Amino acid sequence: MTMISDDFKGQTVITTFEMTPGTCADLLDELKAAYAEFIRHQPGFIAAGLHVNDAQTRIANYSQWNRREDFMAMLRTSEMRARNRKIATLCSRFEPVMYEVAAVF
Image 1 (tube, rainbow, N blue to C red):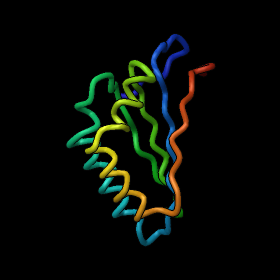
Image 2 (image 1 turned 90 degrees about the vertical axis):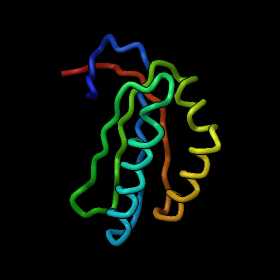
Image 3 (image 1 turned 180 degrees about the vertical axis):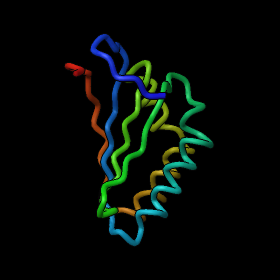
Image 4 (image 1 turned 60 degrees about the horizontal axis):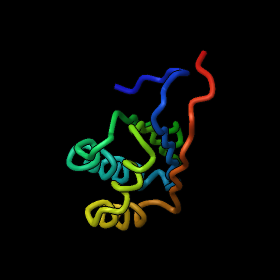
């Protein structure tokens, strides 16, 4: 389960996906499968959450990793590169951005 705290020393990654409402469910299925079958089993993975906006035009993915290198290593695997190619066909764009927790209220 995702836990956000000011003393978290790991890597937070927030990825946003933009798509049409017609492809939202398909993209969400692909992302769920990626986590269930592959990502959650990778070294350094802690937790993640998928969020869909009301218009079904955006998905936000919040994930936590032990280290930046763990996330980068997962992205470089042939498995994830193949999955990302398929994901890219379901959305107009997606962008993972790394963050550090600055404050929690």
